[in-house]
Image (cartoon, rainbow, N blue to C red; front, side):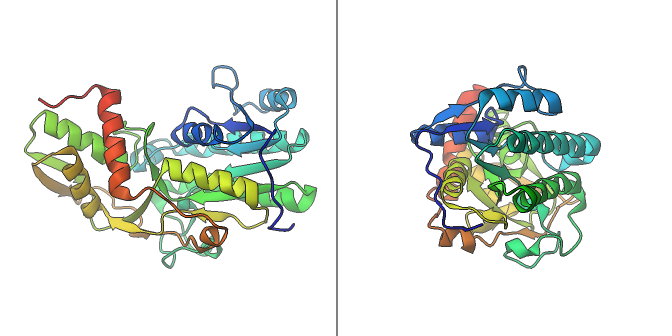
Length: 319
């Protein structure tokens, strides 16, 4: 299929699957600027793990396009504690939605993956071709395997059925609506919560998992949503596309930035007994940039905004 076929959203019915999640909510905000009808359905009404229910809902709703942002997500601790649920639930959700979209003749589908699909020791920055070239990071392999299966299913449906299904692989995302549960969150929201609570409770130390040496790339969720809408409208090909900022920061540098933004003045302590995860995880986003898209929100600005959102949402006030 050609990569230069436009898919205008004007007049289209676009289903955001997973609209209550951080990415899904950002997509709903971004699509408000398009002349399209946004479709959503909550979990109480439709359990995407149930195939028959999912197929019936899609057949009735008749979306023209689907952005598949629904997933079971979490950090290292959650992946380690619930491997069966992470693998089963994500396989079920994405398989049911993708098959329902095919059966109902959905014109375009965008599957949302994750940068954890790449090998633990993949060359940096990680190009799309690095997929399946080496072992995965053990701390999140269950989620990664599910996401690899999802993007491969989208590819298989393109090849066998001619469906215009594409995939995007975002880097670490953050922003309003993130998960700040310390048992299930990723590193940045966990740091924000820890720093705020340490400041409010006047703790002398802020404990950070690992050595602080690993490097990570972060992208504001509103930038991600903008990139996904851009891909939905402009991209149509077999290969998944990386979505990221193209910049990386060490966990130690990230912790220092978060403490500056939150105003925490205590000592940062690193718990080296906790896992570091992948040493580096920087995406090669040259293909996305070549398609005419670039991020707009720098990390310091994005963290400041997210910290403000968290403080307001949690009702935390300085003492």
